[in-house]
Image (cartoon, rainbow, N blue to C red):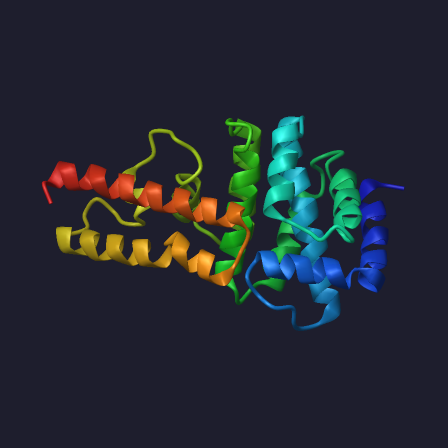
Length: 232
């Protein structure tokens, strides 16, 4: 039996008795459960398995990546075993991650914000050990494309987690031809949209607040760089 078949079989068991797991994951993403039960199960299995397979892209799932996953996708003690089993089955190899990414993209066709949350969660896990391996980077770029994000949008999300010579205009989602007024307006909008206080008010886990704090730091740094260049 392939790993894919084992995960699919286990998904059936979770569908029968994993309501608590679905509620746990819904809470992590700041939303209530709803819609078709099979879609809730597919989303839950997909996020857990995709996280494991992405972490395996460089050949090794490090303890730091596993710890980051556990902190980020918190589950109740009663459901921790289900999460662990799905994660361990999926992390055996990277094969099949595309199907999980496509599945999540299809389920969240009309919810780009949640797709962004999932992608940023994957970036957080991938960079937990302080290094984003080129194979993980490539895997994440492909997942972002399957989620419907452009290369520019992916660089924007990535810049919050990886410190490299990224273009500050990419971080602000603007081109160099943008006017100073457009830059200031975009900066204010991004700060408002990504402020950690918004997540704290929703009562999400501290790990997501940390992600939002990284977002804000990247946005501020990008704006400071452009402001100095333009003497804004």
